[in-house]
Length: 213
View 1 (tube, one colour):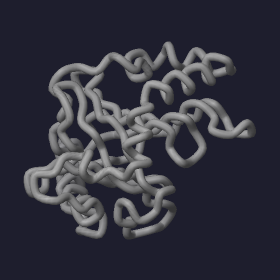
View 2 (cartoon, helix red, strand yellow; view 1 turned 30 degrees about the horizontal axis):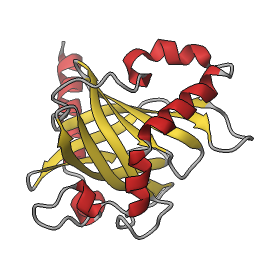
View 3 (cartoon, one colour; view 1 turned 180 degrees about the vertical axis):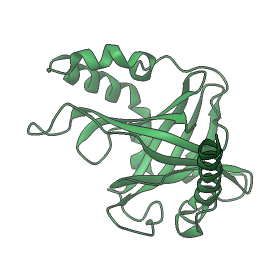
């Protein structure tokens, strides 16, 4: 029992430390938002176009996987891979999450049509009245802001950190690093962020988020 209590205490300390990570990856220093502005006023034209074509990205990605050897993974994913399964009240509570990235569809002929990575740590934080999302571990780490959009989705705007980088580029500075995605709730404690037509590797990236117990 003492070991269990100690493990729980250590987990609580780790959670507090992760929530208080330094401002080097604070999303509000990465995405400049004029007072009262929504995501449309901040997003680049390229990103607005990618979001307008979100359904094309889903269709192309699912078709690629269905034609390959990983077709069964789509069925096993359930609502995670169904484009029209968003539930009301999309906003995730602040905290530390397990996040799993799945790349669907091959942007080039020599790439795989399905890649699923293991769980990494992600953080949802509330700062100055706005939700931030940051992937804390892994070689590709999105970080950015979540904007209200409608009753079933929020829009993510941010940039991609790579490798051992400790600071992220400001949004809009590098087209290849810019990210736009849609955050939706697809279960009682299950969310996803779908990134249509990312600039690297795939036709659609999906990050699954579940609370870290």
